[in-house]
Length: 189
Image (cartoon, rainbow, N blue to C red; front, side, top):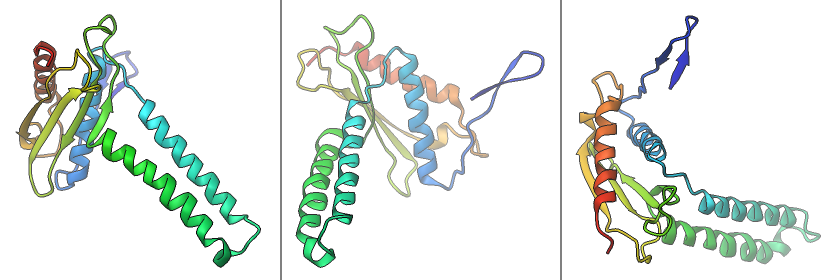
């Protein structure tokens, strides 16, 4: 985060979190990885998120229809169960399970490399009660001819944070950019 000061200079606000909050650590690292990947020329692909939002909107519309359905609750129970909970939530869960997995970022291929590269699928894991953060970069289209093998690293988050909870971005950027470079230098499957 940068802010402008009165004399025209910019200052960088450090990214600080509570080191005892496991979810805050993972969220901050994932957001920083997103910044790094997009700064490398990969634009974010939000199509899958848009599909999930559309299905969620359909679920809400059906819930409203069921609310104002001309039969009262016990009589319209089959309509509610069939339309909302089974059909659309099943579709939503299927998308999350088969497509998203642990991914927090999908990208398009970098500009100028549409035929010899695929976009990225970036995912991470930070198990509960563990300090080991695993970052994985895979092809967004694993069945493509130009798909590359999955690559990952696992490192302790204590390497990237001060004891006050401030992210040492330079070290983290270096590690993530190294992983991106390793992925870019791999040969296709």
